[in-house]
Image 1 (tube, rainbow, N blue to C red):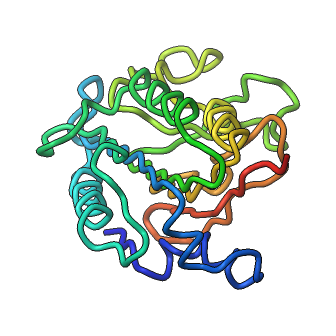
Image 2: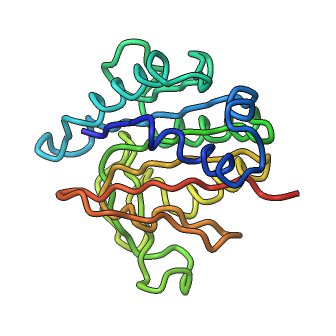
Image 3: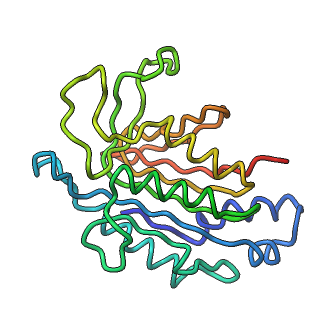
Length: 224
């Protein structure tokens, strides 16, 4: 289970305060807080032995923490917290490839400069041959598996409906281009380099959390 603590949640904003750029409480109170929580537990196109148990439980707990327990002046409003998961009360829909992409695009459209975005993707992760030859040193793209992936039949074409690292990088860049800050957690296998942005060399710092890999980083908004 992933625990979102006061320390980890506020790490991004407290770094600015420590640098003396702005009074911490004033800065934290003035920004808007957004969250996108994605949890893939059921995979209808895969054998049930490949389904998961924990992601939807974690996502529900994280959602409740953000809405009810974040310390002042941090405040997540319900309308700014989107939950894509099956069988969790109050969820906004299933965690399909299209739904995840749409939610990320919606964030990019509505965030403002200095807003804070918490992104949480939990489910299966894997690798597949890189779509762009020479793009990866090991020749492999990291992928997150939404709930509507299909069986991997043609290795040259990759896993149907997989969310590829380059897609994630492009989506995060669109949010950062608005000047927002991102705190990203990828609770899945092969997440150490999940963020592969086309215009940035930043990557996630991964730590072992056997039997999965989890990763988190704060990605600052692009300077103007």
